[in-house]
Image (cartoon, rainbow, N blue to C red):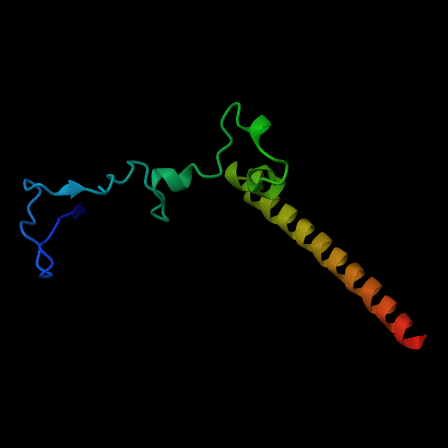
Length: 111
């Protein structure tokens, strides 16, 4: 993709790369080990924990989630089990939170 300065008429002067156009973006060739999802090399490495990175991450970083780690390691059944466990815990916390506040609200109306 090139940026070409025009004269304001809406028509670019010279669109050839040999003109004084500035290259803004160039597509990388797909990786040789292309996945079935056609992910780029960048996308494939987004959840990767490289040496030295983990101690610099905040504890809330999603790359540290157990289900995410299992998924990255190809342990799909363990990843799914862990994800379901986390979701059950989240639902329980949400239920108890709502139960507490509803009972508190009902108590305030009773008085």
